[in-house]
Image (cartoon, rainbow, N blue to C red; front, side):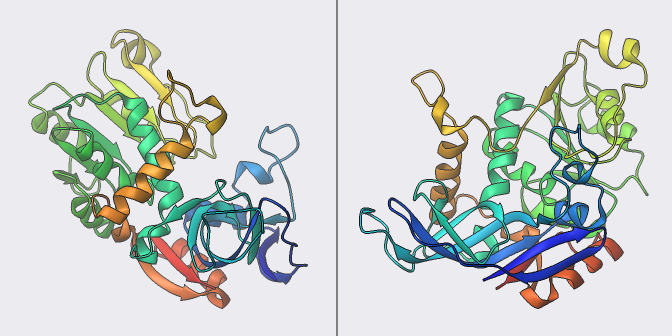
Length: 334
């Protein structure tokens, strides 16, 4: 079977590996699609924390399989597994390996009518849904989203569904801002042309946003989020920061404003934590997303800006580096 493996900085290639055998209680999936986003580029260029020196809690080093969003099709089912038939599709965050043997509930079943352009965002939609849950949005809250990458662009949709009032998205790329508008942004700002601080103050009638999402993945976006949030506002850090972030003025931007800084990790608590007191585990959120995509209530397909065959995986990363404004998420067909 084919796998996409990173062997060193800017050294990513397809390799042949043994195909895993089906075992009891498992299903065998053949990958049909994966995606290319900036996280994949980080693995390729070496900026991802998983490739740094030992001591980093995420460290794994080279060689490392590329990983991310995957859609697989069931090709074989163990005799002791019921309720799953060949041809069914499942989605998850996984290594980019052509054949996967997993427990039926380890991945999320996606509806037969959901197009690949939507289903590919199943996993990352869970990350953004969890971030909005962590933000504790209330009806009418004003929201600012800094960064409209493949994660940030999904935040307007969840914020709107959660009852947000004005949803402002700031990004450097016009194409990304257009996608954010399609997904629910009420206002968009481009820092190259707009005075973001003045515009946000005007949009929020001088109050400032109730919630600011830092989805910018750059050292400058975190202090900007603190600066723009209202007094007693909430700053939710969604970014996969690969460089240190700092609070420039802890007295002005943190202490006097009594800000809450909220971390958010992937899709949320594991299924083992499910109880009457913890409703929304990551698995439960994934099932909700799949159901709402099937019902047409949530459609993340606008974030897919291109489609390529697996043989052009490297070219897709090159294009994303060269023109990030035009290539938000590329759907890779196996």
